[in-house]
Each structure stands twice: as structure tokens, then as C-alpha cells.
Image (cartoon, rainbow, N blue to C red; front, side, top):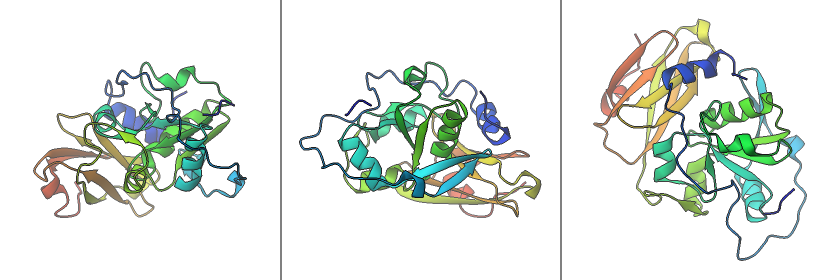
Length: 247
């Protein structure tokens, strides 16, 4: 290792919602972090002890941010951003490539990586999108794939290396609570920003409820759409966070 086919129903909903929106920005990044000033001493990591979560029936291991940063400093993992292009441009882990959930989209740089490379995916929510991307990679026989458990906001909060036009932006956290049909438990609800390439996701719980979380530096008057398997509702963040979203 260098130092330094379609998912099931839930992910298909994402593809349908954002057809044509999963392209990759131009980048020369290869997924590895920059050469560190100092390399941490080698230590043992028991990846078998990681908690796993199911994404479309596939168990995805959730790696702690401490372990991921250790691999990152030693250039022993390649990092893939599972969000959308506007989010990537505004802030991303230095060296990470854009490989949007669920399947990387067109011109996916991860498609050129060896299937025995260690790959870590991430998003900000903290892991619905990264979990979907990781599940797709696992389903396509990539051998060692993890999602960052704590998510990208924790990476930024710790001051770890990041690049983008809004790395130091003051982000507010918004939560959108909604209700869908319990028959769709386990599938995903998508939050899409209108007129921007930004998305978040959240699973539908057994009782049909869901909670979308958005870390956002823009205005609460900016407009978004909530897409569930049975309905789509558009509104400002202020409107969508003001009451339970339902049909």
C-alpha cells in the first residue's frame, strides 16, 4: 500500500432526484493528504471493532476520526468526499477527491483506484451520504472501505487540513424533522438546495419519521426541496425547519 452496480432502492431515489448532478469538479487530487511535516509513529488499529451501519443492506464500518487522521498523516488511506460539487468547492479535506453518493457519478476518480486500497468516505451529516458511497464501493468489491463516523464538520472543528472557498465560514446547524410513510422505513429522504449543487440525506425510521441535518453558512431564506419516496416539498430553510414536514 502506498504510504502517504446500482445500490438498492434508497440510493436509487438519490440518483433519480439528482440525475446529472453527480459530476466531479476538476481536480488533480489523488485522495491522499499532503506530505506531513512529521509522521506519527506506527500503531495498531483494530478495525474489526468498528461499529457498522447498514446502508441498503450492506454493512459499512464507521471509522473514528482519530484513526482516519492517523492514516491520513501516514498517507495510508485515500479520501473520497461523498457530497455534491458546490459543497466540495466550498470546503473539503485537503487531497480528497469528489466522489458523490451513491455511485460516484460520471468521471469518478475512485474508479481508477485499486480495489485493495484503503478508502475512507465522508460527508457532513455525519454519515448518510458517506455510508451510501461506501456501501456502493463495498458492493463493487472494494476490499477495505470505511466512512468517517463523526463527519466532516468534526474534521473542520479540529483544524485538520482542508481546502476550499469557505473553509472558515461560520456554519449554522439546521434540523428538518419530517414524517413519511412507515412502509418506506430504511429508504432515504433527500434535501436538495434549489439552484445549487448541494444535498444531504437521512434514513426514514421505522415509524416513518426522519431528521435531515444541514450545516450551512448561507441564509435561512435560501430555498431547498425535501424529497421522500411519496412527496416533494419546497420551501426556505426557515419554513422547512419551522414545523414537521409532511404531505
